[in-house]
Length: 528
Image 1: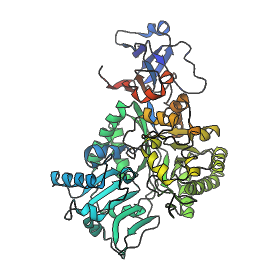
Image 2 (image 1 turned 120 degrees about the vertical axis):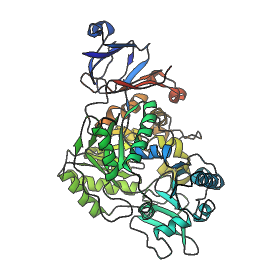
Image 3 (image 1 turned 90 degrees about the vertical axis):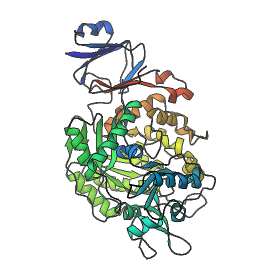
Image 4 (image 1 turned 30 degrees about the vertical axis):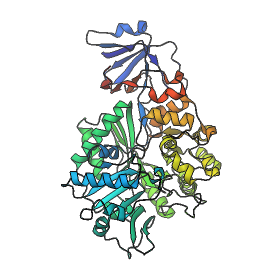
């Protein structure tokens, strides 16, 4: 039975060969698209129980799919962790943490995330001495916006057993000051030395975080998402929500294989699939973050001798990836710098001989060379990229990269020209505003929030950006059940107040999601 019919809508979809052909109506039967056509053609499907919505000429399109968003971390900043994104100075940061400490005396640890020292006038990293001003009795763990660098106060270092004699783990660094003692600044795998001491969240805590993020995703029209680094406890939380029918969005979970702070790999998970959740790909980290100068480069960062951090041992990475592929799992690898990208592609090329059809994707692909893109195309390697970084973190890129690197920074146009499967995503909470329309705007304008333009020749069209946030994002996850408006597809779609294809560039981010539908049901409405 047709339970929902929407008519008088401007229908948009981005699969190859799509043409609205004058169609303005869509019929939903249960949780799938039953028919697409004109209202005159479909009105015979209306029965007494059918809900009929006149869209008033508004645009109806598939729900957005964020192919790389740390769902629980976004929710954590709304629930259990102090959000310091947007602080404008070190003094403001310390005062916020101090106030948070005084208001939450019950907390065993103070955890915070989101600072970006490149946006401050002093442009210097906070250290343990700064955090000690907020508290010396309670451990403080402060995560930089990129999540690849953290700062601890003296108490946290003490509880983690870190002192001047502690050896940095492979793929990470414990920064020492001129006095030979730890400054409190850690990067990459060294973060695990401290996070392993922080009391873990419970499954119920994680579910609260997931629900908090889901509500914001609905507001942005996000009906599907990939969480690209889930540990066994988070997998359990997601599965419990899935079995109970509580997820409310299409989830692609990528289990992490090598946790920070440990030389032992997690057990390789079994593939999992349901209407709302799938596990078909695992996750590795090859390097760090570009905005914090820990992405692994072949050359130096501008005005420095730094080249970032290559986190993976190539032989072990190859061995573990092979073991995962033998169990039917794809491999996704975080690789931003050109040195990391080259290593990952070398491994994928080798594995492609035995596993040609298994998912192989690169997360971020920040600074690829032309030869890298050619190899990706030849070996069916896909990518999930974040043009939204250009908006919020572009000031860092301009500060840290020379002109050659800037001109190849997140080169989405070059990627598409090589016919590489490319999805767009946010990597939130690395960015605060994870509205897909913000990422789409950045893909087209290549503009930072401060108005500077990075590699304008890498701009893509609105249609290409929308495709990358819908059907391509589904395809990169091995999904064919949603991502477009087609008969038989799962009924996940959104209603927009404007047609993005005809909206002026400076108004793209002002487009509003009016309604969000998942599984044929309205899950969010602007209430206009």
